[in-house]
Image (tube, rainbow, N blue to C red):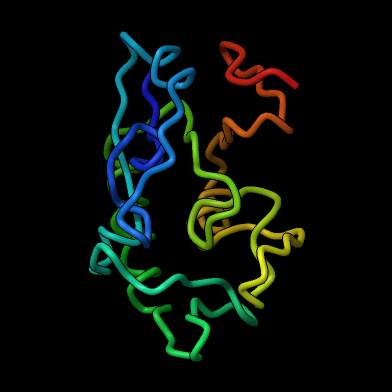
Length: 150
């Protein structure tokens, strides 16, 4: 299976704070698969570390109101162009992210409050019809294999 996977889930230190969201179960599950690591925020030109950003009225902004939307959209375009060339079977993406969040993202108040919504990358990928998954334990994924328990 060819998967595009959020780089932070595989241990790459690309989160806003310089950390990662390494998921050892996901890493083990994907052994032997064709995995491409993606981070649209870094690919769009944002540094590591960087200010935390949330979506506020459709814009990627930090808590001081600085707008990083152009960086996010550049990264989305880069990932989407790569996907069109490489045709992955699925994307496995970091939950809650302003880029990669599927179904739930932070509400823009920087208070760790979740709302229904999708990150900017996910919005585009959905419009293109890609299969999207998250390893978050609150979801059950059964595409070609089970990725997370419910």
